[in-house]
Each structure stands twice: as C-alpha cells, then as structure tokens.
Amino acid sequence: MEHEYNWFCEIFNCHIPYVKVENALEMAKLINSSTMVVGNQTSTTTISESLKKTMFLEIRRDVGKTDCIFNRPNLFYI
View 1 (cartoon, rainbow, N blue to C red):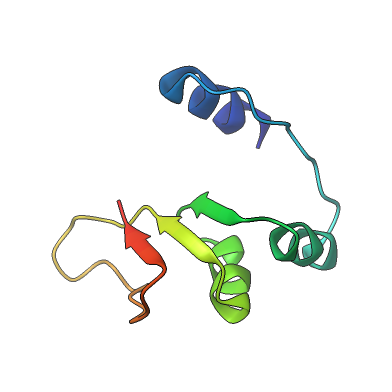
View 2 (cartoon, rainbow, N blue to C red):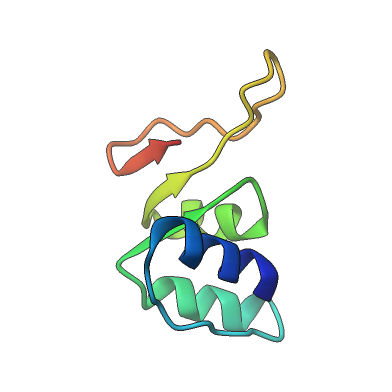
C-alpha cells in the first residue's frame, strides 16, 4: 500500500521506487527480479520464501503469535 511505502521511506530515509502490482503473478515476478525483500507476514512472504530470496521479515513479538519461522541462512527477523 502506498501509505506504508511512504512511511517506510520516511522512517528509513530512503528513496526506492514504488511499484503497484495488480495480482500475485506480477508480485512473484517482481520479487524474483529483486535482490532482497523487506516485509511482514503476508502473501509476499510466502512468495519470497518459495523463491528463497534474501528477506528481512518483521515478525510479531507476542508469545505464540509468530507463525512465519523459516530455517535458512538468508532470512533475517526484525
């Protein structure tokens, strides 16, 4: 969502292109062409995991609420 993109750029003082996709196939193609993915527990995570992309994944800190734990070297939990 564009408002989350704007918030991310402001908080991290970065300027990366905003890309709007229309469906999961477009998202998968975009993820596949990327170097890394930064996100939270969404369908984007599922696609990134299946492609084994380097990923920085925001997880819930509530005990027992995190359900996206993958054991691989290029995945970092934030």
